[in-house]
Amino acid sequence: MTSSGAVTMLAIGTCQITASQAGNSTYAAATPVSETLTVNPEADVITIPGTVPTTATVGATVPIGATTTSGVTPTYTSTTPATCSVSATGVVTALASGTCSVSVTQPAAGNFAAAAPQTVTIALNGQAQAIQNFGTPITATYGGTTPVLAATATSGLAPTYTSTGPACSVSSAGAVTILAAGSCQITASQPGNSTYAAATPVSETLTVNPEADVITIPPTVPTTATVGSTTPIGATTTSGVAPTYTSTTPAVCSVSSTGVITTLSAGPCSVSVTQPAAGNFAAAPPQTVTLSVSTQSQTCLLYTSRCV
Image (spheres, rainbow, N blue to C red):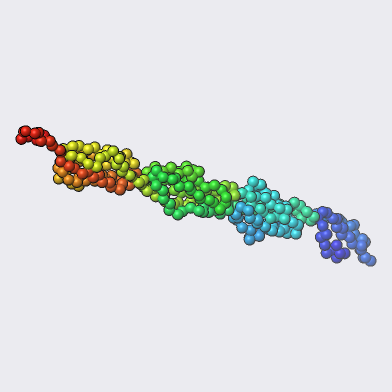
């Protein structure tokens, strides 16, 4: 303090200022008077830069860079250690999806009072992932080999599967069961975890073609017959459905719905055996049964005019 009363603040605390008057030829010296000056600490203010983002991705680092009026580096503390950590210099590391909260404080220091604490909040999102090796239409045959699903996620996490449609079912692990001829849609998903966000689901169509049906003619069916005889064909099919029999030579032979040929006259007998598409089976290639029909033999008795 100068003798003329100019005060200079040096530090927080107290000081005593005394005013005196020494007097002169007219006045005697005055009695000195003292007063106490209390110097309070300066307010300290923490400033969070407006450039600190409010969102981040798991695995990212975010510098806070807070400043204080005092120039002293503030103290950073993560109040959500499961989702983020923070270094002594204020660099946030995102650990898991969720909300990250960092407390920024500055206690009293030197000539500055403690600053009002500030909080930095960052919404942490999982890393992006995608389904791959999936989405192209596939085919299978009823009764044949079951397709193998090979979807993967860029995160390395295992995808899960669901299906819609009557032709198939699928387990969550991707085991396909063929139920019928037709089509079904299979969807691969990955729900994500604390590190990765859910992937966009990808679907593909499985077309199940009908199984081939085959008509089998027993080798015991004869190739010849006589007029008036009956010959059972007894054809079978892979599907187990009874085939359809049609005589293409109705003047020579007829055939019942169960496949029994009745010969009517001499000549070539031809029977078409067919099986149209049925259920989960395709139409079978038609087969033909051919008989050479001859007249019945007869014997003439000697010395008579009669033949039998």
